[in-house]
Every structure is written in C-alpha cells, then in structure tokens.
Amino acid sequence: MLDFVNKAKWDAWNALGSLPKDTARQNYVDLVASLVSSQSLNQEKTSASDKKSEYENLVVTREGNITQILLNRPTKKNAINVKMYNEIMLALEAAGKDDSSLTVITGNGDYYSSGNDLTEFMSVQPNEIEKKIQDASVLLRKFVDHFIDFPKPLVAVVNGSAVGISVTLLALFDLVYATDKATFHTPFTELGQSPEACSSYTFPKIMGPVKAAEMLIFGRKLTAQEACARGLVTEVFPDSTFQKEVWTRLKAYSQLPPKTMMVSKQLIRSFEKETLHRINVEECAVLRERWVSEDCLNALVNFMNRKSKL
Image (cartoon, rainbow, N blue to C red; front, side, top):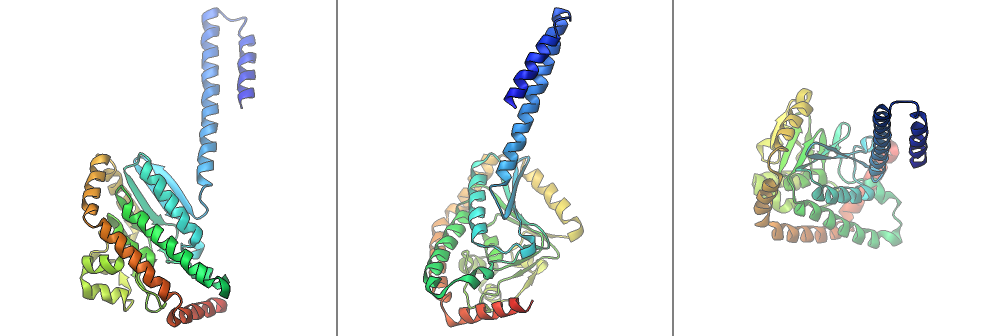
C-alpha cells in the first residue's frame, strides 16, 4: 500500500506540470488526501478483521457507547465450552478497559445460552478426571470473579431460553431484559450438581429462600414473567418488539455520565463484593465434590445416551 501511494504521488506530480501553479498544487493536495484516506480506511478494515478473529465463539462489537458481547454458538444453543469461558473473560477484560459506558451480553439464535457444554466431558479419560475437575473448578471461579469485579454497568439481553450458569449469573448483572419467549431453568439436582455463580446467596436474597429453593433445588423452570415477578429479570418485552425497545432504552442509558455510573455501581457492589468472592470459592469447592459423585456421573451417562440416540 505504501509503495502504491508513493508511486501515485510521483505520477500525479509529473502529470501536473502543464497546469497553472495554484491549480496544480490544489489538485495534488486533493489527490494525496484521497490516497491517504483510502490507506487509512484499508488499515481500519484490517484492524477490525483482526479484532474479530480474536474470538471463535463470540462476536464483540461496539456501537456508540455500548460494547456488545454476542454468544455465538447458535447450532449448539450457545452452550459454553472451555474456550468460550476463556473468551468471555477476555472480552469482559477488554470491555472493562475501553471507553464505552455500558456492556451488553446477549445470544445469537433462539437460545440465550443452554449453559455448560456437557459434551466436553464425553472425551475425558479415567486417568484425566481428577485434573479435569480441578481445572474446571479453577476456571469457574475465575469466570464468576470476572462478573463480580466488572467495573461498568453490565446488561443481559436475554433473547431466548437460558439454562444453568447463564441463569445463575444474571443476579450479578445490573439490568436484565428478557423477551416474553424466554425461559429460565436451573436443573442442578437432575444433573447431580449444585448451584454456582453465587446463586446460593443471590437468589434467596433476591426472591426469598422458598422461591430460590424451588429453582435451585427442585429445578422449577420459570417463564420470563415469573422471573420478572421474582426479581431476577428487570423487565419483559413482547418478542416482536424486544430488540427495538431494549436497544432504544440502552442507547439512552449509554448517554448518561459514564464515570458517575461506574462510581454508583462500585458503591452498590462494594458492600458485598467480599461476600460474593467467598461464596464463589465455597460453591466451587462443593461442585468439585459433586462432579465425582454417583449422582453426577449417572446424569452424565444418561446425557451421553440421549445424545447418541439423536
């Protein structure tokens, strides 16, 4: 590109010899400006392309003062595998440092997220189980810590069904908007597992202990309206106007003073941040035990059998 620009400048200069001096100078300046502009545009396109290639399972975009993190495994119902866990952490770290004022997480397709990708357990060899469980526990703790510590207002735009950790994390967001077609399901007992993402603390605090138990222990699936009534969802919108209404509101919120929003969030979160981190550590320790339990292993075998019949 640099060789092309320089050659074009030289050719243009030679071609201007027969024109009046002032006209030649202006024509040359205009040409050089257009070439430099073209060069900058190509560099920006290359930079944008490189940025997108950072993520395999996400699409991270910026519009105005809003950074959007799109969960992008629609054929897998946006199930979260190890690579996606790491990519979400990287995207949150970048969003926390950029000059946007809001960060939004949403899903591509009919699902917001179907939770953990259990197919990753299918290839684990018996001699790898202990290490796999230890690694998964560390990864989960770090992942949830990123949500606890995220400095800016964090918004969930729940575009469809949400399962497992994609539900329990919602209590760590600052706003949760949902389409009326969304459902919220935490089938932990059915899978031989226990609550995570601080939900053993946040859910009883938000909706009361008996309503929390109905979800976390008994696996009650909630409609969007029920989740809103229990305080897990901020507001529910008709699916036909969901995207338009939500983004209109978020664009308005993104014009609020960003530093003031951050200070207010940090003040609200500061009173319980230490508690949330402690709960996260305790939940991950319990999950390490559950992952080698008979209940959990049987649930994984049943899951594998169902997948093999599809």
